[in-house]
Length: 316
Length: 181
Image (cartoon, rainbow over all chains, first blue to last red; front, side, top):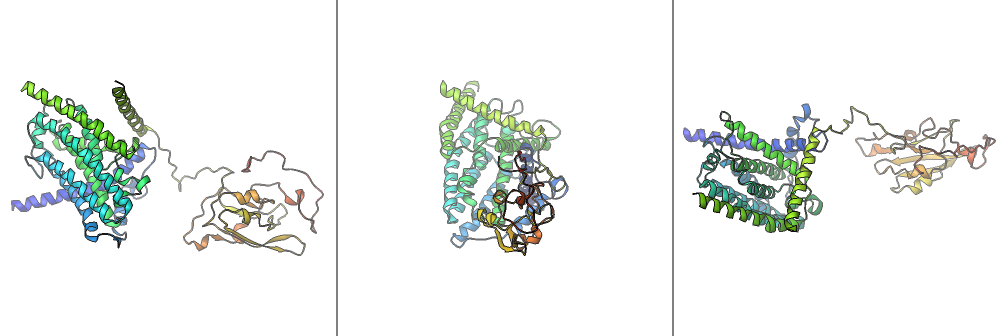
């Protein structure tokens, strides 16, 4: 009975996250419109509330075309990988004290593993499409993710040292007196930039840059397969911003009586920050992104790790 | 030291641009809600193409084929025919609006100011076939934008039933509705 209950709760959680991802696509369009002095979708329903339904109808009934020159099995499986991995990222986020789907002692390592697995969906879709544009997009994506993953891990390392645990619950509890963003501000900047690159968000949307390589690794995808890529991107934004809220902003800590609303508010503020970055910063050149990662963010995160370690060694 | 200064400068310029984008939340949106709220169009706007008539009710078009030859997308087809007075008029006049790019070159080429582009852009249709406008669809019963202009008072061949006594040059003043300077 207990197993069944657990299954039902986890399943409803998954459905909820998928709905959130679909909802975020509309929210982003609306917020971008407000930032750019436009109106956004406001025709379907009251103030565009039924726009999500219209988008779903359109995406379900579009022709799901598999190109004859593609490697069919890999082509079919790569959006599923992308969707599943971005979904798994959400499981380690605690909503209040030890209430998450996966309460594991290696929470942060699990997150890093999933982040490095996201590369697979991109590279498999790029290679199996049999298209030069998508191949170029996937190569860009690989080089970007490889160069940004390193200091993603290193910046998390100093927090692990500070809280002396890999478990996210312990990390949140260790921020009881001061949030991690205040002593680790440089670290936060580096992690935020790296997470932008991991989610393929602006200004790091090199794998799908519309102007140079039309739509990158997902140029051949249509219908529901494209929809899976699309929604997985938004789910990964959600999960990464929830993760940042847990690591740097104290997760459910804050107002004592409403822990869930606290973490939801923090997550939405970070999602808004993601959208604000998209609205304001232009896309840099491809080699500049890589050199910025290796020559600036990597030494900064290493210096920060060094400083944190020294501090912890002296005071303990 | 210069390296550090560059880094700090770049960082704060990014923050500044993000701040200025953020401020736009409090600004009013500039979108015009089109079907409910009509836009104000100016006389020089190049929209629907019409054929006009002169003050006496005659067709201005003399089917000289200048508009068809200047048209860059070649969407105008017409054929000349002469009536019993010796005056020429178009036997048929077709404009394919699915190909027209509304450049206004036909209006500039026209010596009799017959073909004119009016400020009206609501030309959409469900079938591509319906966008081919015949002469009956194009012709209107008044002078359009150029009320006083009469081609036969300025130039033209001699025809019967038409007096050329008033040869006043009435197009010397600056015309604000014309595209050319």
